[in-house]
Image (cartoon, rainbow, N blue to C red; front, side, top):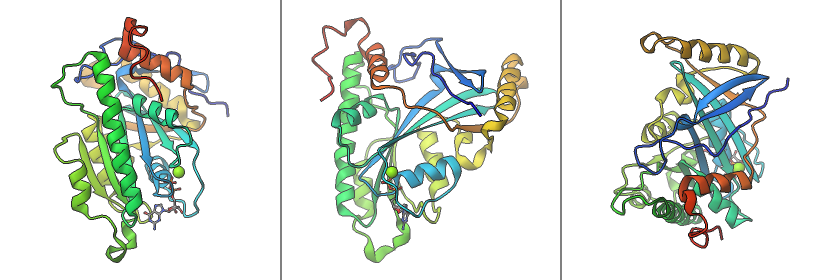
Length: 299
Ligand SMILES: Nc1nc2c(ncn2[C@@H]2O[C@H](COP(=O)(O)OP(=O)(O)O)[C@@H](O)[C@H]2O)c(=O)[nH]1
Ligand SMILES: [Mg+2]
């Protein structure tokens, strides 16, 4: 079955309390099996999953999208997933970037961070080096986002407000193997109200639902986006999904369907690097790109 989600305009402005995203009525239009699905730009988010290789990033993403766990390790180059939701008549889109732990191209990783809205930083509880990697990544996220804020002309005193979920995975391996204390992880994000720390086991499915709900809450997204709180609709039913969206839009506010549906797009493709760069320029530099071109550049 042909089903593609085409982002007609990735250079969409978004409105946010932080003031980083200029308010705009621009709409992204997705196409599913020939059907148009409109996603308000302000409801479109990108989640970036980072951490050393083999810590369980792809398994966590798989739990989120399908509830499944893969015992066998398959190296990730960079996987892009998209899930669209209809929550009480409002359409949301969540893009998930599952990165490789090796980062053969540092500029691409930097671009992923610059364009990310929500971050999941994963380490293994029994690996010191994987924790050191999330320490580095955490520093890099803060640097990149500070740079973006400065370019966007946001006030110096304003908080960064970037939701970061720090995850200690493989808790099933037990205390004797533990190499990172919980307090050390808590310390890394101390004082940041938009960050949280969870110890989980993707294998045993321990604490994942709580972690996803906390992440969505920190990101000010509907808790119904959490895997257990919406009905999963397969792409075969995309027509029904679309009908529900259109019907809900045409109704008055108080009369919306009390439904929460989620649909994974099997053929979503990562926007090109060029598109990401244009998006960043539009978002941050506006008409001043030439003057600031040498700063905040990709390295
Ligand atoms: N024991 C245990 N193994 C896990 C857990 N999560 C992932 N794994 C295993 O760790 C390996 C690497 O997982 P993967 O998600 O591919 O790691 P990634 O490179 O970070 O994406 C795989 O063999 C998984 O089965 C977990 O919670 N506990
Ligand atoms: Mg992977």
